[in-house]
Image (tube, rainbow, N blue to C red; front, side):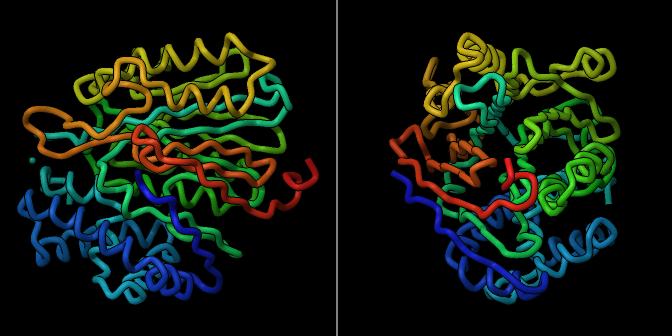
Length: 368
């Protein structure tokens, strides 16, 4: 059974937050650096080459948000690792694609399998009229030992999923298309983090919708006070919207927007063959209870083991005969941002228990 994530509080300037983060999470960061460093070395990306690629990519990061770069420099200091290793942890998908496609910084030969199932239930579809935003993060099983929950008093630390004190909540799912990795865009994790820094919903939406990306991604934003949900299917150069049905939004790892499917080619099925029935099972289970959905209903969907190990929630398994890596549902997150509540279970298919984390809400979120 995986251990619960440690909660780390951060405050101060970007560099100070980074130093605090690096110092307090040095053990988890070392695991992440070791894991992604080994993956990079297997592709021929040694430390000098990593430093060169990061140096060439740095203007993109600096232009997007120089404060995030300062925070990563602080993390490196606090954790006693190199700045380039911290960038690798935060932008591993983009950096590893640059190795495979040097012309980005010549065709894409391999993709990293990536899963995830996202669910949002709008207030009108729940029993207690409170928005529920849930997510299964499917990725390499080693990642379970390199995760922490960050709670900060000012604009936050680099983050993958979560919500902020104004009730803006974000999760994301892997997508693939024929447009991927033709240019060097902003790392997806940095885009999500930037969205969580905003106090206004419109600015968070603009960040996700408009920022150029290297690869495709589905990004879901919900807003606690209003109950609004926005699902953006993002190609590197264009964004498409998917609407909730009966107050329920479900997204796995294939494109849903009819407009998107007329304009690009779906390439995700080879890496996520369960995506179609994961989507259907989650949506049908929740829509059938629309108006009376509870947190327990959402948890049951996120832990569904139909067709395991190719299920919504799956135990450690090899991705394919040619990929020696082990993948799993690393974490299940169930969030009720109006209450400042996040429940997280690490490696839930192995019996990981849920741990509760809280955040003091502000403004309209607190009033609601």
